View 1: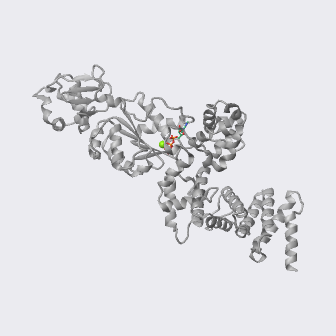
View 2: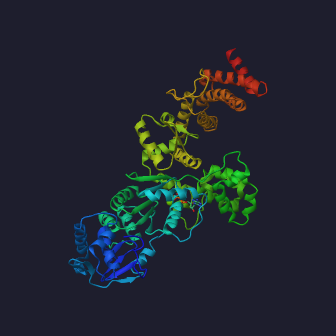
View 3: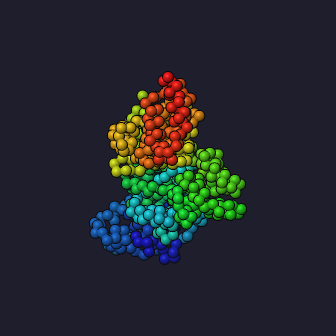
Length: 602
Ligand SMILES: Nc1ncnc2c1ncn2[C@@H]1O[C@H](COP(=O)(O)OP(=O)(O)OP(=O)(O)O)[C@@H](O)[C@H]1O
Ligand SMILES: [Mg+2]
């Protein structure tokens, strides 16, 4: 049946036939508010007969309408008619065979609007006709729409609050305009069991069932003839149930397209994954125009400027806005929460309190999901869906301030109670659940936590009481990656060259921890020697001197016997080599330390 003849002459999309309603829009047969399971070909035959309004329909007409452009044996009609009569049950006599001529209905069907179609008109619960305007998603919307033309199952995957639901709603609205089928939007955030998911979908698709024990097969039969876009929103906490249901549905329903939003893919055959990226943020050193061109900044200004008095405050501080958006990783939810704080705190304070972002980023929209009320709640939601081994790994990964590869991860997180096999399965889990980002440098994967994710993970590491243990391992691992004799770059224990920038970023934070009040100077000396040497090699002279001096100063706090003399000598030598390029003065720490050493050896 083509789109043009899907409706009756009167334009109605529902036909009443005795105690049945034939919904030509969602292509379902209803009786007493219940779906009558019917295959797609059988439904087409009924629809053709009903649309003919009592006229006799010949076999060849039926063949053309039901199997267009296909040569099929006549007996197919008999098979489908028999299935149709079976579905009509006691009313099987509604279809009359006129030998040698064709078929007709013995009751005049009545074209109506409403009835079952009422439910069709409201087939988008949770999908407001109008919603907030999306910022910076034109390309994504275009790409997703293109993918949906061929993909039967498309999953929008990404971190919490990144904008998956917002995108899916926009897609659903746009597809609904001019779509000849039905768009059905199902919000799953509030359900938690397989049956509840199935029931929620059934209700949303107007396939109501009096009890929760609806079967997938029944369901698939009801949807099999329909052209429909089924949007399943917020699926990660019921991912198994959704995977099984969707698997069953797409296998049975030729015209069905399913769009899922989830922090984790369904991992079933036929799934196309679309990774939702953060909004774009300015790089350090961007011009004002470049900053204002970034979608994250536009969203921040849009939300902050809705608060009257903040307009001027924000307007004069574009660079600061850029920095706030960058430190919030372009995450729309975090940006909205931060912007809403500008009116009371001012941009400066918002920027300053990013170090305590979980206290700052609260007070979401009153009407938002509970997990969108605060930034912490959105992470809590993801964290609660991890198994204990993945939770442990997640906390331990907080020690990496820069990117890290698999080898570095194992070097830091594995021990006699946490095997490499655990690390493999758990990093896979964390990547899948959008808590850890992964990039590929050729065959090597590089993992990274966003700043907000790391801040949250750090809380978990502290709560486990493991911060010192893991920080010591991190510092030691980084030291082992640098071989003083070699000129060049740090390399993994396996000999593969490490990414210099990532090594430096990690080493700087390990150094800062080691020489902080909670740190461990003894562990830090070795790392400080390595870091100073790499900084000297790289030509970062001032930083080399500054860190070497700080480390040498701290040595005075230690008992002489506990000092790693070799590391100390390396530090002094590196500082001595760097100083001439930093202005040529002999620094106080070196002089001071030299005096102490002289005294000790006297
Ligand atoms: N492109 C955008 N433009 C404007 N606002 C956006 C955009 N994307 C997301 N938002 C806002 O950010 C918040 C979070 O978005 P959304 O609910 O779509 O995230 P999500 O990825 O579905 O999160 P979750 O994983 O928790 O389901 C919402 O308040 C939404 O309005
Ligand atoms: Mg969502």
